[in-house]
Structure formats: C-alpha cells, structure tokens
Image 1 (cartoon, rainbow, N blue to C red):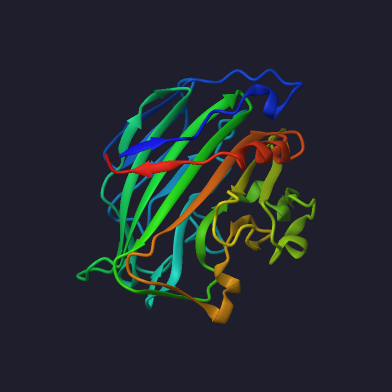
Image 2: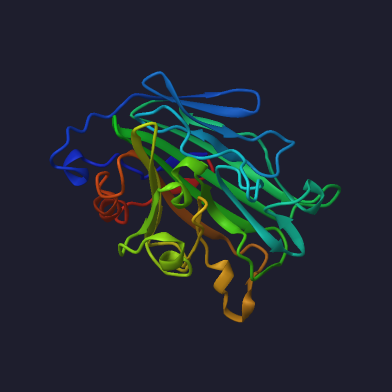
Amino acid sequence: MIVAGWSILAPAKLCASAEMVPQKVAAKLEKDHVTVTVDGKLFTRYKFAASQKYPYFWPVNGPASGKSITTETSQPYPHHHSLFFGCDRVNGGNYWQQANERGQIVSAGPKIIEASGKRVVFTDKCFWQQPGKEPIILDVRSVIISAPSENLRFIDFEITLEPLTDIRILKSNHALFSARVVPELSVKAGGTLVNAEGKTGEKATWGVASPWCDYSGTRDGVTEGIAILQHPANRWFPCKWFTRDYGFFSPTPMNWLQNDRLDLPKGDKLTLRYRVIVHTGDAETANISRIFKAYKTQHSHVSDD
C-alpha cells in the first residue's frame, strides 16, 4: 500500500504565537496492536485482536497529563470503545455492539508504511462479516499520526468502504467514526462540548450539522481535550452530530438518512476522512478552528502498490 498527500501543517498556519516544534513519532507493530509513541512516551495503541468487535484506538493520551482522554469502556453504554469506527443495521447485521455473532469488523493485520519521524503511517484491511459467512464489506483504512507541537497530536484517519455485495444500511444512531471521552472530562463532570459554531452541550449540538466538535475538560488541574474534524470532501459534509453530555460524540449522517436507508451497490466505494486532534487546553486555546481551515485544503490518497 502507498499512502501520500497528507502534509504536516506549517507552524504559522496553526498558531502564530506558539512555538511549533514537531515531536518525533514512532510506531511499532506488536502481536495485536500498533503502539505509537511521541518522544518516547506512549500516545496511543491501535488495537486489532481477532476477539474484538472492531479495531479501535486506546489509550489516546493527552499531551500534558499522559493520561487517556478517551475511555476503553465505561457506563453507560460500555460498548463504546474509545476512538472507533463501526455501524449498526448493515444488511441485518450489527457492527457496533452486542455479540460478535451479529457482526464483526476483522482486521487482516496492519502494515506500517512509515515507522518514525515527523509522522508515522500504517494501513489496515478489515472485513465486515458474521461467523461462518462471507464478508459483506472490505474496508481499507490509512492512519497518519503526527505531533506538530508538544501540545498537539493529530490522528488522520481515512477509510474506504467497498461493498462486496449490495449493502443496505437502515437508519441508526450507531454509526461511523466516534469517540467516547473519560467520565472526568464529560459535560456531566463540568467539561465542555462545543461545535464549530460555538454551540455547547448536548442540547445545542445534537442533530446540528457542523464541520467539527471538540470535547475538553480539566482533570487533576490539567485541561485537555479531543476534537473530531470532518473533511469537506466527505459525502454528507458537514453531516449532523450525535452528541451526549456523558462523553460520546460522533459525526454521523445515518440517523438522518433520506428515506431512512442508504443503499450501496456492490463495488460502489465510499471514502470518508477525519482528523482527530488531541490537545492541551480547550478548543479555543488549541486553535481548533484555525487547524480546520488548514486541514480542509488537504487530501490523502491510498492505492495498491
């Protein structure tokens, strides 16, 4: 696989007043996860064990605290695993929650393309299938992780879904790219959920179309957060958000589908791109709006070697 096209943002584009010194990033492929470090310290792991419902990132450690911004599992809804991609009601299967028999997204094994430097890059092929049945979707994903400063971490996530048969997805609030922050950073604990228009909290952001949302809060005296940015090239951009004050947020069009369904004919590929920003401070301090302005001009390309 070849991944190209993403660039590390120039310092001036991010924050004119802050010194932007890219940090060294490294990735190592281990038995059932890819470990990513920033300046030798653990940032995240991409977990892909065959027993999992789907691959996901955990922990996703904050730049200042070194503690995970996201939770691997937590009440309510313990099936939310940190930072993940899945979908319910796909050809009658469930690739989001419940037992693996209902549906599972199975990794064929990641490949590291760039192992260290200003960024790391790895790819993965995953099959959406139920046990004993042929897969119905092949997804090919690329992940680019960088740390443009000591206070910022980027995860650029691109996924191309290729239907291996005709696919019908029914209306569902359980769909696509999602994050679940730790309870201590949730709105319920005093944290802040804000979208690009400055609307805050579940009541003001749920069902609202916006290019990005950010979740931040203070834990042990340290303020940190995580943002999800949708790329403008995505279908449905800017799609509506499913948000919860307990710590969940997801840009998903699937809860507002026309005719309450989406049909994807066999071979009709769908590519979606997102940027995750893990940052010190809140959305304003981290200049999320400025980062988005630079991000929306970028693109990525994945092709077979």
